[in-house]
Length: 115
Image (tube, rainbow, N blue to C red):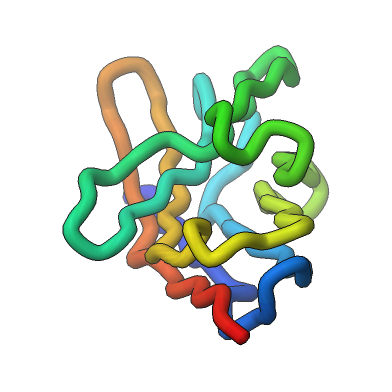
């Protein structure tokens, strides 16, 4: 069974940067796509960034130009570089991998943006 482990979260001031990493237990090119989602208190989980098997990526409008998703096949990781963080980016961030209709989620990692 695929396992995803997130790392890199924490507390950062507004305007700061964080880099999240998702480590997969299998070759990431096995997946149709991998993505980062987030869930803020009282809100539904939402897509933040997605990278497809062919390398194409997509972002939520709210993070466009500030966040970058990337992958490293040698390390089997998918990272999310987050710059110019805002208080509204505060949430638990989840890594997700999909193979056809089968989806696997990481346990989530907290990101708090506060001064």
